[in-house]
Image 1 (cartoon, helix red, strand yellow):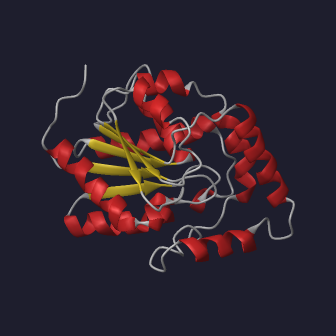
Image 2 (image 1 turned 135 degrees about the horizontal axis):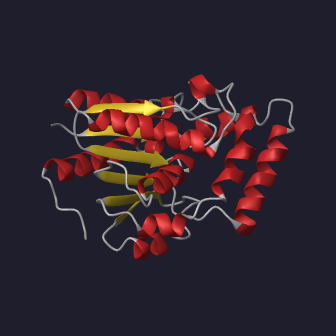
Length: 244
């Protein structure tokens, strides 16, 4: 049975953010799918509910698991929700996990500041779209620049999604991860602060910091991220024993 990859997007964006990764894996003959969480992408009219987000991931993972071992890959918010999913007390069929740009606990002053800024941007006439477009134009290569916007921006889902993250017991969830785990962060990633703590909670995990890269590590240096995907796929293909 061949490795199956399931991608989970970050906040505001959608499954389209993984276009470069899906194309890369398709060229290699590796089966992959990218989900849209509630309130995002093709489901932008829905309300974001954390239980529905978990169910979306579960449906994709269990479907993929009928065809082979599953590598779950989540970015930012999608990474945090995927940690909670993969680290459940009753573990789902996840053979390996990549958490990209998600090594920070969503709580306290940091979360409050993020929610405050999100609300301020949402109060603008264009909800901050002009600024978002300018930042992406200045930081992303042309080949991936349109991917984050291709499925639409879920501005209205931001605040409730951020609030939902604070209800997760991520420290316990990270500690319960027993599959091979890779944490992938950009050098200038704002969600790096607790990466060493995440490593200590999952001692078998690997931490990889991509130089000259921001929070949008998947799109800023797609070839590097794709190479790291290849490493994870190859590791699972070899059937490396899971840590005890």
